[in-house]
Image: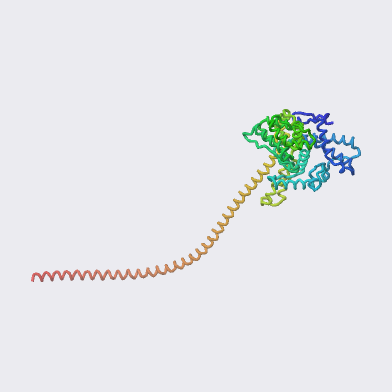
Length: 506
């Protein structure tokens, strides 16, 4: 049995491995959620599968590794072989064609009444969950989720927990594993109103008390319908917050949450409903009805990381976090999940033209999944050698995809810019080349004209030279005649002077 198997004994890492009669009660609660008329034909094997499903949900979902899960499956196989000898293993246990998942929302989505039934196959279940996700995104802030098989399984598990009265969920997983998003989707599927606290620097015990008062009123008075109180470990700004949460989970009664006068007003509002439900028409009866209705309608969902010692310490200090909740452990994403998530985000690179085709997308997505899984192996070796944990979370994988997309688009933009600059340079060079060719043609024509001008100039120079020689000869002759003329003029002037002298003497 589980209690006699060493791997199921509580330890520092497995402190929440606490198995008791309450777990047995949870199994029977799941069995009692079924409808008898569904199991009339071949009912033994069908109902045995329901029992196996509830055992897996109660015991297997809290296990922290695959080795413990395999050990539990071995125990269940022995028990089934002992008590269900007429049912084969293949008929009882899950197969790829016949998953072992029971839900109450699939039948309602198909237009029937809400029955707790096994699903036919994963494609039909996936379609229902995807339709619910689309409905959620039309009404509330859109969640870009990749619904791989593990994610759908967690949605069904959370939905199963919060569909039961007093059903509270403790979702344990590292950051980025999808705890909050899947809890939101499961709450929407179960038609639960989502409640959250807004923690800031000034948020303290008084603010939490006011929020819890409002949550109590919404769950009991107005609207008095199902509520899902979603909280994360990051919102536990003060460890004293968990004192209120522990009391709320264990009994539903938080001391001093309301004053006596406030309780009188609240109980007066539920008096008629309490009487109609068969409660005593006195204060104690009204208070019991108030608390019972609150516990039925409000479902607490805590998303907590197992990293560090906080989870273990809080589980020890506030035992209701473990004993009054159903644990759903989020394991590392398998290869098909990593591949599917990478394809979902990288598909924009195909539509944007960054990838040539979907074959390139598939290769890149497969490489990313391989890189992430190889780091998990390195983390194990690091733990063995150094005795220290190094976590490579789904959030790290999403950051890898985001970094790759940014880097690829940035590098492609740089290459495109360089190509455009090169093309512009080549275009300018072609323009220059064409202009140079035009200038060469113009130069040829100009050179011909220059040669013609040179020839004409040579002829003109020859003519000018000849004319200059003639002019020089004529100038020399003119100079000789000028000298003769000047001499005759000087002789004439001398004769005139002599004549003037003789005339003056006479």
